[in-house]
Image 1 (tube, rainbow, N blue to C red):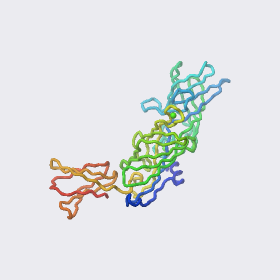
Image 2 (spheres, rainbow, N blue to C red):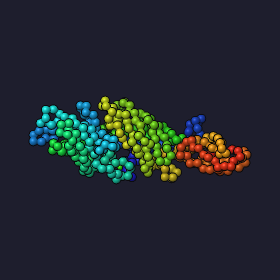
Image 3 (cartoon, rainbow, N blue to C red):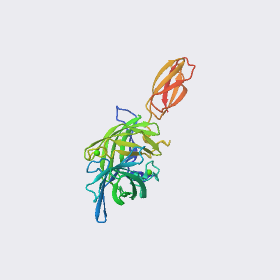
Image 4 (cartoon, rainbow, N blue to C red):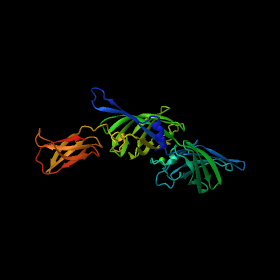
Length: 371
Ligand SMILES: [Ca+2]
Ligand SMILES: [Ca+2]
């Protein structure tokens, strides 16, 4: 079990309790629920570094924009790029007339997932980075492309580590302190008999000091294997509004739902959009009905079905609206008051579902009963 989740459970961040619905609204029972979340930035925050060589001081700053001062972001690159990350480096070479800024690409260490939560351990403060190496390339506007190599170190439980960045052409190595941005928190929601619910997200980055996030989130259940979040906003500790959206619905991996969340600008303190890309993990160890599907994917009970019927070319088509993930039995009778007979069973993969009833038929009544 991931360390981050154990910590969340110990802090009583996961739970669910039954309460009665308010009179008049519904007699259905509803559940007040809490699930743990974590947001792991896939940008790395670099601090400037200096190195003395033969009495001369070399200095390097890194950022995702060449604007001075550089914003410190080592940003993720698109998948077709030769390196996982990149940005600009502004190098102060004491033998040159002035600082020079050039682009570079740099891999982070190869993927490993020792705690099996779907997230590269490099981006998890709970997991150590034990002297891992990676390669890159710098595009010096004068000298052309030259090699970069990096050695990464970070202790488990720490957001901060060191990246020893070696510029092959210059023969110098600079020790950049780096930090991960990682928020931990919760989504509290009222579970109802619907495929969509509104939750309240609160999260804080206590290790690297990125602050807090809170706001309303609209969650859509897509069967038992996925969750989607509508585009929305959260507010940080300074009152700035951060708009976000998911790249794809979160996919389930055991008790975790994992996917990419992108902010329009994840660091409003700088004018340019930066620190935008995060991995979102929603973790829910609760499974009240023991079917192997976490409770967050399951409404407290299914909605009553809504049926409509059409017939053409000797075939009856039923359109069934209900709660995704639940099973409805389609029953029929020719005369109201006589026994209902089960015609078929529909597992709702989407709503509405269309059901073709087998011929022959001679008219009658149908109903859908949630199971
Ligand atoms: Ca992991
Ligand atoms: Ca910004």
